[in-house]
Image (tube, rainbow, N blue to C red; front, top):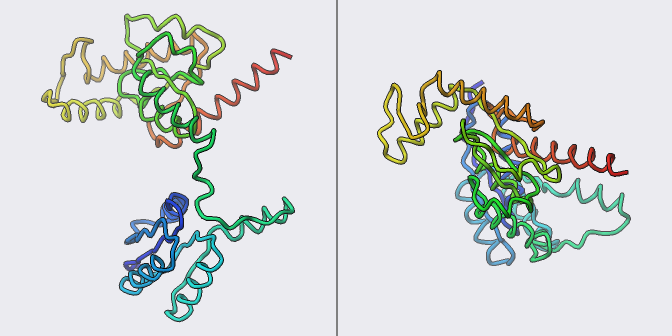
Length: 285
């Protein structure tokens, strides 16, 4: 069946992150969809809404909506009825369920999830922490980490730490380099350490691309660095084997990131952290 081009309008009174995530998750179930997303975020006045209607009429297509203000929703529904547009209010079934279970009505106030509360400042603090403790920096402050990620160079430690910071998790990362002993602080039983590993061929491709970006002239063949053969298959394989053995010796769980997105890796890190905390709590009873 041949797919046709589709306009999808994401209409939100906040940042639109929820709609973006839902749309991406849904469209991932289709092969090569020809979709154009039209993102209408922070829509909180009638004037803004009417301008959105003009844009939707110019590029007609279904609407995914997360507006919570009743008047704005009613006006949007009326517009869709007149224009023959299809609309889904994404939050409706969730709010209905929660209202029933909690026994209290929702407030219908836009942007309530984005407030400068303790959780917000915890995320900001975690972001600063990641910047200060990236790639083995500031060893002393590592004792404050909620988790420490270890792995060879270019094994996705830094981007994973930044994603975790957005969840309010203070994540430090330490590179594993053959011949160099990891910091003593990693032996502290009060901080979970998790290793990241990757398939050698995938790692070589990532390293080649990195070298090209920094202008070191990455070319097919062996590229020498101060630490040895950075993209030679045999040397990379030995480097990864050494890192896995170190993690096994120290009792650190490992995650293979070869076919994982940063989001999937982070979800696994959080799961391992939860398991670590549960185990520690049982031992302290």
